Length: 313
Image (cartoon, rainbow, N blue to C red):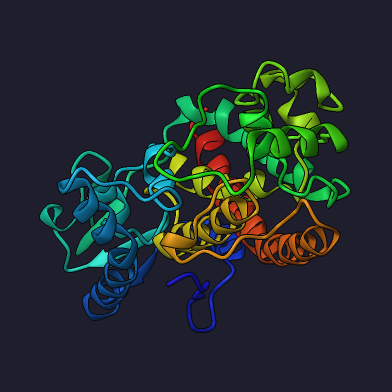
């Protein structure tokens, strides 16, 4: 299930956090409400987690979806665990209802401990990165060529369990006919050595804040990483929405790749043709539009924990 499922009448968590700070109080959720939200979250996430765990038990891999569990470091058990985020008391809960170590007793229930002040530098960097990335002019001219650049003139391809759609000569010729304009370091770093000089810029880790932009499939996929980096101090519904977005982005990513994934139910987007490039841009725009609201919600979550961390200094 890929669709993004917001809460009914979702609150503005940033505004609520400001109100709570002013009142010096946490919000409370009755046991019936927080248990229902936890059950809905676990049911939703299980649709993604269970097939991965079943494949892993058979030592089998899915070339599209397993990336989201292997490249990203959030474990399935962590993903299944629900949290309301900071500033919320779970009424009639005890420590056995949640992961120990980050929760504490509060009145007649549990709440998250204060976000660690030692992580303030990362939070401040992330706020700056997310804000600047979202404000930058989007670039819709990359056409998903990063997967092509990763196998350009390489003897060994990355996804050896699936065949290529084109001959190696045709693949290399198409890369040579295009201007590579990747802006995301974590895609660029996997380019073949012969493809890297063909990119419009030689990207470095230190340049991510200057280069990432809101049309990038990988930058939008990474919103999921920003969610789990501050889990459980972020509502799990947002984390699941970010994962759903990452799935959509990953599907587009691999459909536009030079790999033949029809055996897995994915029709190719033939970016080696003008029609295919137009189709890619249309779908890339849809992913970027969906990412806008998620990026804003993630920014709000980071601002909430950032205020908490600064209050401890």
